[in-house]
Length: 477
Image 1 (cartoon, rainbow, N blue to C red):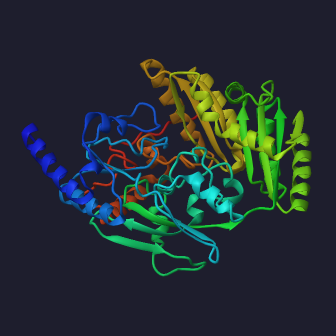
Image 2 (cartoon, helix red, strand yellow; image 1 turned 90 degrees about the horizontal axis):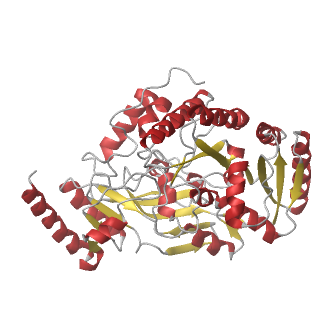
Image 3 (spheres, rainbow, N blue to C red; image 1 turned 45 degrees about the horizontal axis):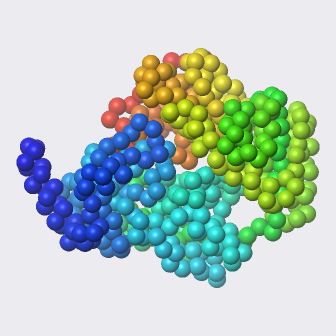
């Protein structure tokens, strides 16, 4: 299409967008578009044509109908904290900014649910329900700034995922705007519902490629009575990995079972200044909650297991304040590491938890093989490790080695019965590798679903489905 024809087309689209949401909610200035040209993923940036801020679900639906009619790409945007370039507008079009849809609509204490709009900040939800002695467990590290719509789109996890699960486990009902302009409701405030396909969980984790979540009803549970936190210190990283398996094998499921290697420990302590033991090669941060007697019993047994697996020290947090400091420090791991080099690439290869020690060793071996700096932390209890490469995107030769290193890490995770991503999503960064996990037939099933709901391909194009898949490695050293 010629430049003049494109300008004319965009002019008409702008007029119609203004009719739907008003002049003040359509931004096509260079500065306005630049702000939403990237997210938290390194090395991905592209300008959208418009940034549009709808105020109602009906406006969202009308925008999608217009974009389908005009074959205009749409990217739903919350806070942009995702780490797979899912909200980067790679093909221009409309960034759908959900800043106005940010209300808590209902807290239903009889049915233990909360109904929210997608732009609601995650921590606002947790704080609101805890005032009523209720609990919303999913807690991504970005919870202070991430939106619930983004959590649903990516099926986010968090530190409490081992015991309580991830976002999909708390999604009971959705309102979704479809590309054809229709609004549908899925699920409900029901313990049981098998009427037809499970559309709620089709949209959760679909990364904005099928529709736009405009409202969500989330399950709540009673707030746990008490909790305790311990730190287990190791001079042998693999011993820390073995401890994870041993704790689960002893039929205990902690709330949190986090792993940090020495590199990450040093970065976090330099950032948080709370007295973390930086002389340790690795630590496990372990939290248990529930009735007092069960917590006391489990913490005592877990400490015994850690010592039996060569922990050099096991420390109990002396107060709730100290426990919260430790959890906050762990959530800051990415921010702390990001201060050390110009570019920080965080991944989330996931394996069965029985393979944690093997995977930790493999990551270390791969880092040495490709001569790159990789720090490792993550949710060891559910097998979800975050190998984090500290590098510089301006060094093309090193970036090539970084890509090769992560490809080998993904290959090893799959070889061990794991997956490419446990909670960050596929987006652009993992799309070339998705066939390794699902196979060609699995990819085609997904393409069929996408085609049936979004035949024009306007919803978050360029994500999940790669134009070219990576060849698998012959072997993993």
